[in-house]
Image 1 (cartoon, rainbow, N blue to C red):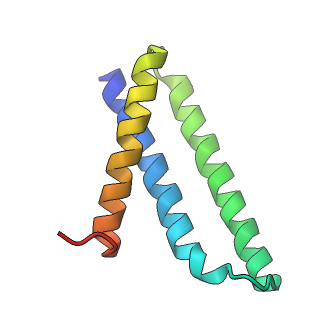
Image 2: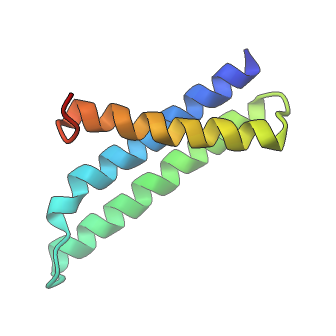
Image 3: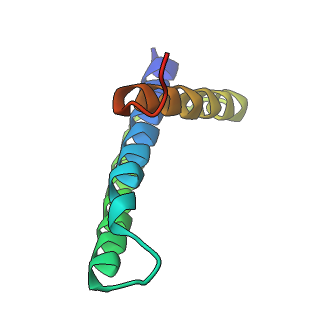
Length: 93
């Protein structure tokens, strides 16, 4: 159960980061303006807050072996990328 909670938290973390990056991409373009700086700042603050909340959740879990953490994180990134790609329509079946 502890490992399932870890996997779900990693999946949620990576999904949120991918979604934030996907939707903020249209506001960040080559000639940087104030809007680009505001979008970058908002993106950075959002990611910092989410990672902080995720680390607090991980501290409440029982210890997990590093190998399992790495495997769960890699699988979570792959599944989050596929899931967000399907939801946003970037990946078609």
